[in-house]
Every structure is written in structure tokens, then in C-alpha cells.
Length: 230
Image (cartoon, rainbow, N blue to C red; front, side):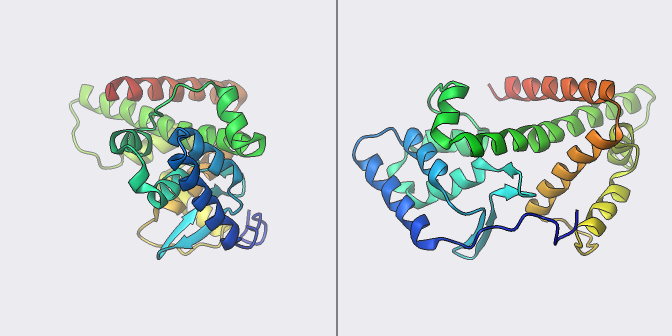
């Protein structure tokens, strides 16, 4: 996918965005639970990316994967003085919501389209990151068993096991396809785009049995990570 092929973001609707922020503050002051009000505001949010107070926000990765927690962070900052600090921190840093909503309730609050994009982000980025952590852990344990130490080459080995090529090779390929410069560093936004690209790459190049096995391994890793947070 080239830069020209990527879905273009709609032009910023700054007045509408500001109205949503103002409405969010108003309904929280009126007594609505802040998390419900936040999800409703997310459902109404009209733009895929913006620059706000000098910071760039890209809420929609590759035009498909909705980074809802990034938008939640942006909105929470706008009404920060109205939110319980502990609950806000638990949501933004640990993805622990203050209310136990069902999937159907969550979907209704943010809307069907954003919910599908949220699922794209979950499986395409959150789960993919967990898969990389899981396989990297396997590589480290094998090295320890063999009496080897050090991290050199461990990540590239994990990538070869998952994708059939090193991280460096794949990152260079991704940047060529997206017309990005071949830098020594990578921004958080580009890393998310790269991870989503890896997810699509894995679906295209791996057989279905391996895709299913790797996804199961990644979900198990996510469960382990969540248990460690408790």
C-alpha cells in the first residue's frame, strides 16, 4: 500500500470537535457517568487525525484500525478536572474501565463502524504485539536453556519465526511500500502502522493453521499480561 493508496482522512471539523468536547463536559457536570459520556463522545467524534496543542493524534491506523484509547486520552485531557484521577489512570494506562459494560453496550455507545474499527485495532495491533512478546519470550527461554545470554538478535529471531524474515527486513519493506524514510528511529504512530502492516502480512503469507495457532498464542499472552497487572 502506497501513501496515495491509503484512505484519506476527512478535513478537520474543528468546530464540531470543540462542540463535542463542550457537550462532554456539560453532561458530566449534569451527573452522567464520565465513562458513558466519554464513549458517547467517541462515537460522535468526526475526525481521523488532528494536531492539538502541538501534538499529532492519528486515531485511525491505515484507515481501518481505531485507536480508541488515544482518542480517550485526548478527550480526558480536555475535561481532566471533571474526572476521578484513579479511574482515569486505570483506563488510560491499564485499559481498565470503571464500568463493566458488555460488548453490545460498548458497541452501541461508540457506534457500529467505530466498533468494527476498534476490533481491527485489537486484533491487528494489540494481539499482534502480544504475539511478538510471546515468541520473543520463547526465544529467550530457549537461549537460557542453552546457556546463552544477551538480547542480540533475539527480536529478529522472533520475527523470523512469526513472519519468515527479520524485523529489519520487514520494517524496510514496510517503509518502502508506504514511502516512509529509512530512519534509525521509529515514532509511536509509525510503530502502530508497522504492527498493523505485520498483521496483514502474516495473514497473506502464513497458512491458516499457523495463523490460528499464533492468534491463540497471542490471546494467551494477553491473558497472562492482564493477570500480572492484578
